[in-house]
Length: 141
Image (cartoon, rainbow, N blue to C red; front, side, top):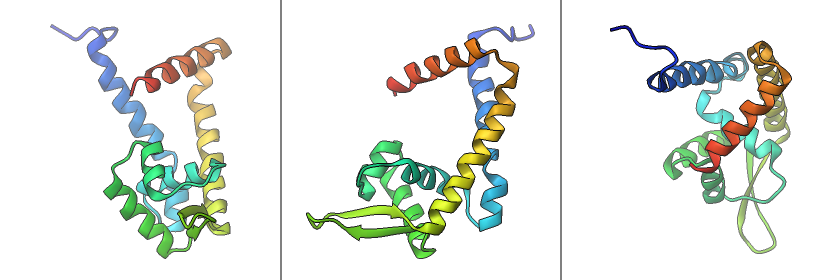
């Protein structure tokens, strides 16, 4: 029996293909700067972050293992793409350096361009519906 491609069993397969494609969007920028995919979420999140975060809070916001966060941040700190400073309460906080901000902006622009291409098959109404569905699912994670 051939699988019914409308079947719910195909959802993980389709999501897997989509995730592979989404992760590949950053590859040209990462290659240009000698970075890996592990760094994308940290750079992009810190670029749009308007609050002071330490490594634990960053890890919590991204839903990422603290050990992975530590490894990624150590590499970004070593390359001066992320800076660790101390706030008034003596808490260590993370922020992007100027170069880190440039790379994060480039990643965001590349992602937007590629997402626009990917979603061009959807109507405006379908895009809104997709965004709402993804938001709803994400809130349960």
